[in-house]
Amino acid sequence: MQKQIGFGGENPQARFGHTITPIGKERAILFGGAVGDPNKLTDKYVITGDTFLCDYVQKKFKKL
Image 1 (cartoon, rainbow, N blue to C red):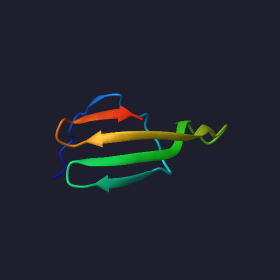
Image 2 (image 1 turned 180 degrees about the horizontal axis):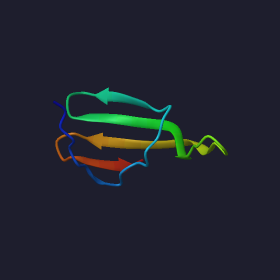
Image 3 (image 1 turned 120 degrees about the vertical axis):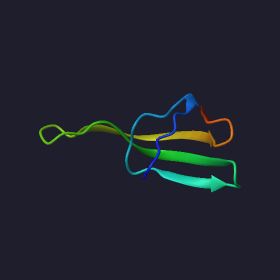
């Protein structure tokens, strides 16, 4: 069974095509991806270069 955990701070938008890289046992870096509202008719989404720090202990994201 999966459990969803809420994170605070500057949460990134829902995205696909991103990378997330662990930095030790307490943090990870999320980079890039595509955000927006892709649908079958218009495929409107934007490729980003956003970078976020995810802190597992504090349960927060921070945009870098």
